[in-house]
Image 1 (spheres, rainbow, N blue to C red):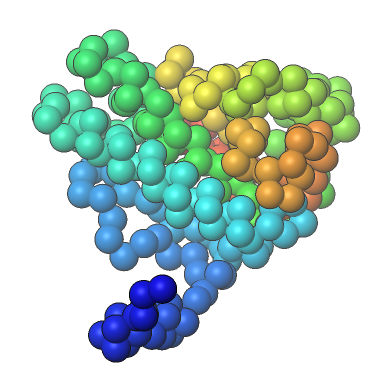
Image 2: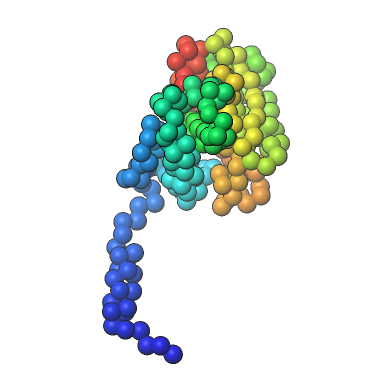
Length: 245
């Protein structure tokens, strides 16, 4: 059996000390210090990582945001690097103009721009206490879906019915009309020039640590962390033509 050298032992001890001395802040909400170079960046979370524990555990939040979302941003910036004509397009315009994206990077841009837009929206609509909306948004839900319970049930049915990975969305038009739609993978209604009021991510990485294969339990609990004040702001912005992603 080989005896470790003193240098190897000191090296191992130093590495272990560094590991334990490194800051451990599971509730940190700032993006990584080194952002990928390019026009797009990982947004801050508008709340701590434990803010959505009624539906999503902090570990899932951190992995989902710091790793999955950050990867979409990095890959998008890399795909755009050598294409000046589209590099600085606003994200929603880029997604609505995929036919202008060079064919050799079109699929990569589609997937990663969609992932960036979808997740940026996703973080915004959570961090709340759930319940039900009020005001004009509640009126629109009652008009288009009869009542809130029917709206929630139809949305959950759509989300739970997605085969494999994808998203369930609520879109809103300039007249305030609401519609529930689904898209596979990281596709988004922005690709069709529509505006997204809210949406839920049903990729397994969004819920698997807590729920495993119980997607319906996750989608039911998700309503407990929605921020209806923020969603109402998005509703107003969509009707005014100001909503981007």
